[in-house]
Image (tube, rainbow, N blue to C red):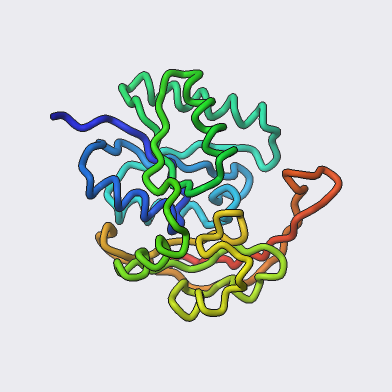
Amino acid sequence: MPKIPAVFHWSGGKDSTLALHYILKESKFDVRYLLTTVNNSFDRVSIHGVRKELLIKQANSLRLPLYKVNLPETTDMEGYEKVMEKNLMLLKNEGLSHSIFGDIFLEDLKTYRENQLVKIGMEAIFPLWKQDSLALVKEFIELGYQTIVVCAQDGLEAFCGRIIDQSFLDDLPENIDPCGENGEFHTFVFDGPIFNEPIKFLLGEKIFKTFPSPSNSEETIKYCYIDLLPV
């Protein structure tokens, strides 16, 4: 039976990586592209802040084509949706019928993704859906993947720049999801079974940025970022 042509929505982090691990192992889908949104102004992965050069190194190591969706530094949901719809329609016209995501348990996000894809006649796939967060991150570690926290919410800045291993999990506060599924932290994976060679980098400086809260326009959320420098 021929494989189903699909695009994989790639963040470069551990959940994306484990979801891709599952997909490649299953051999049901033909992953044609890794799709990532990139900030036009800074040439960095949206939200995670990882440099585009490292994103390209990841894709090269995975030996999968990278499909970059360029976004302005600031855009509203309507603008974001128009850009995404345009790009996904281009991929659909190439014969891709499915979009794959690394989401775990956020019901509203899953519903949003599904509804947006229905509009253009594509189907969403969620390999990690409803699995236990702690079990997933432990499996990720046991499989031999290596990832570093590149972005963390205010109060978790001490974890920014740390490798996720058992000691990381031991130190993580009990109220924080072990996969950071609520947006508590984001990661960059630099080695593991599906990578053909490790991605090398040096640690740069830490910076702090403040953004409007997605749930309350009068509130803000502060994030700590650590810059990873390609070598």
